[in-house]
Amino acid sequence: MKVFSLSNRFYYREFPDLKNTVLHDLAVYNRVLHKAYKCLYDRAYKGAAFKDSELHQLLKKQFHLNDYIPLSAVHEAKALLKANAALNKKLIQKTEKRMNRIGMKIREKETELEKVICEKEKMIRKTKLHGTTEKDYLYEATVIDPKIKNLKNQIKLLKYRLTGEKQKKERFMEKPKSVCFGGRKNLKHDMDTYRYNRRKRMLICGRRQGKYGNNLFKYHIDEGVLVYRGIRQEIRMPVVFHQHREHIERAVRMKHNTPGKAIAYELYDHGEYFIIKAIAEYPGEPVLPSGRGSIGMDINRDHIALAETDRKGNLVKAWRIPLKERGTRNQREYERYVAVKRIVEECAGKKKNLIMEDLEFERKKEESLYRDRNYNRMLGTFAYKRLEEKIERKCMEKGVYLRKVDPRHTTQIGKLKYAKRLGLSIHHSAAYVIARRGEGYRERIPNEYHEYREWKEVIRDLGKATLEECQRTPYLCLFR
Image (tube, rainbow, N blue to C red; front, side, top):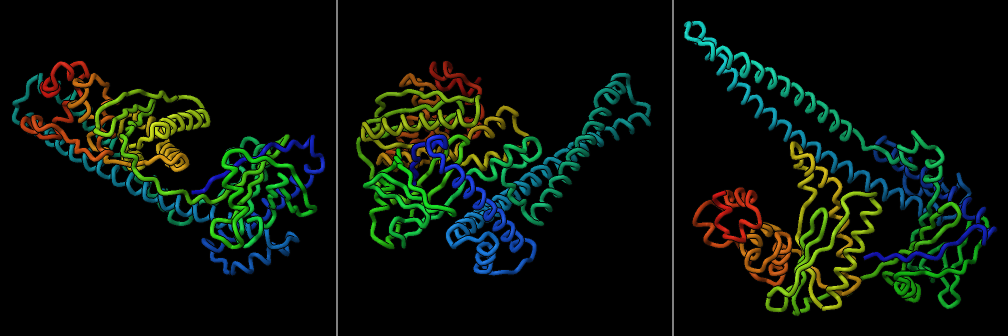
């Protein structure tokens, strides 16, 4: 696991000598990065032939640099190219799935059109035999003919959309899009922001063979000084790292050429000041189950429902943490971070395990074609993967055991078995089922429901029943 620590702010007005040096190095590094990415992109997709050593020599000669900045720029350019190729592959897969769903929809509409045309032909034959009535004529004119016209238009639009998806796939197959440093949107509308984003950061890779874990940054722990070897001059800065500082100091104190000693430093320019981010590798320690119970969490788009159990699987308490659906992306991310921090600290304080569902939102997003608009908006704005990563990272930091369980039918089982008996809401009862599954209890649909119908029909009718009806008697949900 990678951990990072942010430094204090270095204001240019307090360090006037830093401004020219830092801005010059940022500009040079990003020029090297753009050149390296273009060369690697040409080699990958346009047939250019050269070795990595030749690229390094070209960058050193063109920009009059030593090895360190070109090596870091080439490393970052390779990572960007690899990520771009992976994204392109994923886009191709999503396009193929959309094409399959559109093809299925076309076949459904064509089958429906054939049935309506057959009905139209029956009406024509009936007319030839002089057996039609005024009611038949009105049915043909007001129902059958408009339906045929609408179905033909729908099929035409679906085929048009299918053609667009095929063209999109061909473009993806030809070559992936190259990275636009600074952002394509800014390039069209805001040139000042575009130029600023192109040169606002610099990432220098770590090196475990060095004494300080990096070639250009040297962190003197005892003095509290960070020495930066710039292109023009060497700079000494009084630095204070904040969160996870102990992991950065541990990596610096490691022996020479030890795995995990490398420390990467990233310099960010924020206009009036700049900060430095130190990134180190933290192996972490294996966490074992506590045996004191668990806290199950049911994640929803507007809140997180939680249920706590003791060591025997009995319910201790249930509560919820609200989440914002609106607002900017940063606001939503910060609120989710605060929620995750509260949950993990609750588990760490009570020495209990954290249980969550092993959901696949990517598959749901791929299958969201021809679904409800609100449902698709929820899938698009709910970043479940980032929330899951926050939970995993926080659990590793606090030493909390995290387990993912099968998410199938947790809401239905909780609604049938525990909503009435324990007086819980649907989401709290689902969180209770998740916690019990994490403890090893077998949570399944009650047998009495299997005696009446197939389970799929039970789920379909269960969605129509309210919580109050299920609390009166669970059988009402089968006959509503």
